[in-house]
Length: 410
Ligand SMILES: *Cc1c(COP(=O)(O)O)cnc(C)c1O
Image 1 (spheres, rainbow, N blue to C red):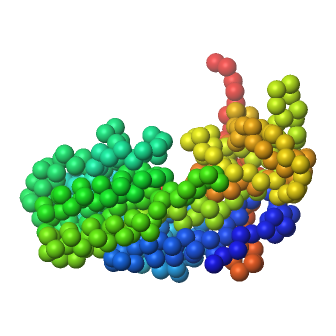
Image 2: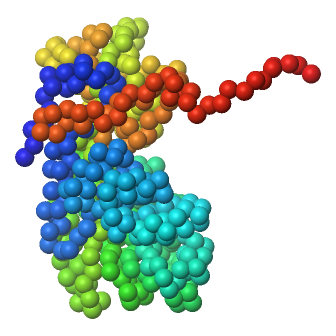
Image 3: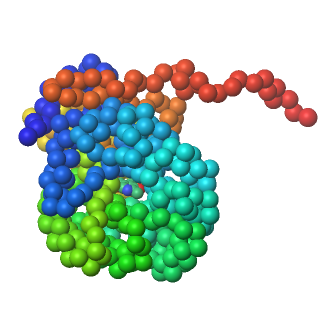
């Protein structure tokens, strides 16, 4: 079991490292990992951490030590994974619409490759048919429910090769001699209904017979975590039970055992992370009380990009009287974190904490408004350590080249 970090501990971190700062709680990551391991213990399952959620190398190394493998969506993520100590065999490269040269690099690095386009599959088959096994990403055209922006299996989605193109895939596999080791699906994020996973699995079963060399079926991810008190998380235990049953039936038919692979991102790191910001101003207008903090969508874009709800706590005044606020950033652009939020009375210089900020938080941050991205701190066994320094003005200018332009009208 892990103990949540206390407000006082978090205030101490904010004071020591400054704000805004992302804080990751290592024990929560391992707690989540163990839950998944437990849930899928009924069938041989491998968990590939989808590192696009959070790529700090310390987080990667920590998750590697838990026993996980790694899912990467760019060649740079693959390289960072290798640097973190994952072996090529532990890395799955699942790119989308990348240039073929990136795939060639992945072949050179000997990682597993997931292909999600017919033309790429054909080119890959012609070049490596006999030498390099692949996984194929299928688009099952399943509606994962929820936000369209984070749904990837629907008819208009750019991801995967359509299930209706199965004949075309077969032709390529046959003519190029490709060794297809895995079939993959990833239908979206925040999937509440475990039947979506089971339906995907059924669809993979229905086409598995076309491939004789399969070693695994990869169901991607989409495990939901609770963002609000009234929210719930995907029932991974229930899913594990149903999956074990379904696989047992399928393997009899297919004639040999297959592993199940999953690629959890958010489930492992979302709740483990928080963003601590400082209140610059409390601004009373005719209509509301704004709390203006020293951050914005340059540091945490999910509320603005996905309309995501992030719980907020005033860790400086946890027992102050409750009042209603609108929390906004300091960016010159509309960057509202939350409307009409009940918070313990907020004063200037208080620290506010955004919960569930571990996934797609720091990772989607930018230098908009020429502001520095946050520092990152990881806490393990009660000890906080800096894992990314705050940026400096020199770093903002570091890659720029000063040339002599004369602004002369001609
Ligand atoms: C983003 C992504 C994941 C992780 O999704 P989460 O919702 O963060 O768990 C897994 N697999 C692929 C291919 C992805 O693109």
